[in-house]
Length: 325
Image 1 (tube, rainbow, N blue to C red):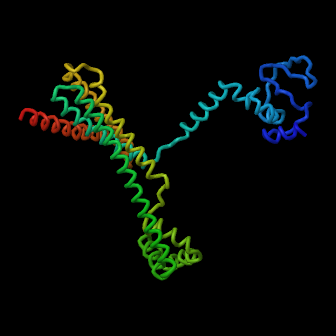
Image 2 (image 1 turned 45 degrees about the horizontal axis):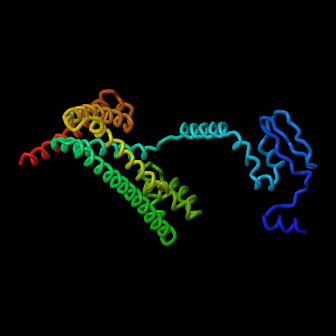
Image 3 (image 1 turned 135 degrees about the horizontal axis):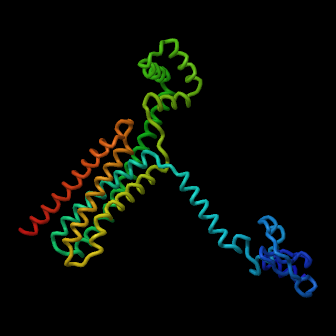
């Protein structure tokens, strides 16, 4: 009776002494005999997870005398499994066109605004001012761009939901108007009245089908991904941070009296980066195959170089003029 009360209080199940054996080890081990005799060696063998679970008792687990699973007993195997699963997930990941567009927006702003700011602040002759001002602008710009992208995507989703509610109300309350919209959508594609009536007859059998058809083909709207605001905000914010960090790197690597050298290195790095960014942006966003030519990509890189360089030149001129005045 006392043993039963003790097991109940400590939430342990009463287990026959004969079943309280330690699980076999993957590298060999010993088992205690129930009668308190000497330990018997076990041969080396591999055990499966289900065998370990079936032979392990709750008393053994709570006592902490054995590992909770074979993976915990072999952490190297756990790390290998984690790396293999992560590598598989990375290989199967495919960015959407919207995600690429968001990254380009963030990178474009990040490589122009902080570059222009750091170039302008470099005329003050202090690397500390350039670094502190650049980092402050980088953090503020990253947050601002990320929040702006998330709010824009949220507004897009809200607009779709509002249009969906209006279309549903139209189909339920004014089916004649909905049928007229179907005819209006199909007429430019050369459907004769008989063919249009067949489509209308099929769509009229279900209000949900009619609403879905009008949203997709008449209004040409697709339901946004629910995670779109979060994805958009993170992508634009990270793009801005990565692009804005590039012109700051030289200022971290020089002394205060070498700010001119850092400025020239930053200008050279950013000129190359802006051209490459414009080059690959043209290739990635080109819809037609002929727009992906090397000449078109070079033109895109040149215009990106002009825009970023002009912004930096204006910033340097304004700060230099204010400092002289």
